Image (cartoon, rainbow, N blue to C red; front, top):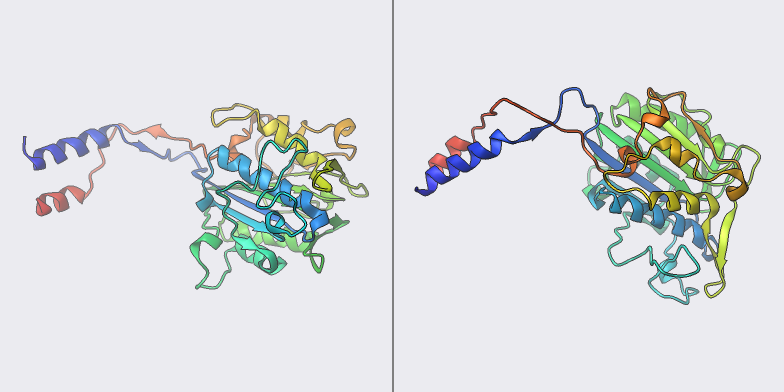
Amino acid sequence: MDLRQFLNIFFILYLSVSLVISSEVKHTNNWAVIVDTSRFWFNYRHAANVLSIYRSVKRLGIPDSHIILMLSDDMACNPRNPRPATVFNNENENINVYGDDVEVDYRGNEVTVKNFIRVLTGRLPEATPHSKKMMSDETSNILIYMSGHGGDGFLKFQDSEEISDIELADVMEQMWQKRRYNQIFFMVDSCQAESMFLKFYSPNILAVASSKVGEDSLSHHMDHSIGVYVIDRFTYYALEFLETVDQNSKKTIQELFKCCPKHKCISTVTYRTDLFPRPINKVLVTEFFGNVRNISWTPELIEFSFFDNINQII
């Protein structure tokens, strides 16, 4: 058997068992936008929240190329950090969530309301590197996680500006009009976090918040050797739940919503489902936190001009 025959047989066998995306499936890829909006050392826990979610979505299969990570302050390199180049989310310090493979896309003063909106809407300058762009489309499921200080109808960025609930709702609508998502899961851990999604009016959005309007969202515990609180309550229990999830898990968003009852969170976890087309007990956690794709077999043989090119080369 010569090389030409071998290549022809190889590609015929390959195509005979190829997988194609089913025409009925609208979800073909996942993105995550994970944002720490707070700077200063005493907000260490917000960076730990964000890095913990980042670690979870990577473990469940979303690659760095599909994650936009925004960190307002570099806690790992802060001169007050007694454990340089590390960020921990638990006082036992078992897991360094900063790790050695973190890819931060927006850091420090780059984390602004303007850049956050531009990432979501795709309205970035042409010269922006691809690593800083969310290249989503109408088949993308997007997880948006935000952690910081908030109030009734706003979330602070860098302690110097804020994004309002109305602005955020309009951003979601722009995304829908520009066909930048299939479905969105919006998750926010801040005081009065519920207020950030009450104005949403675009379809196919699920949202969950760590606290009701009028409530504070509280930290979980302090690491006395570091000297600061290291994680917030809602994110702590959400991560505890996510640690039980793998890429083949059948756990649902409804179960995630129940992970932090009031006796644990102290605040009241709230969520919004009226904009979403499916019951939450049918929505898998991995549809947003993982990179699981729905695929089906095709009985047809797909012809490519590649064969002609191969024959010409040989």
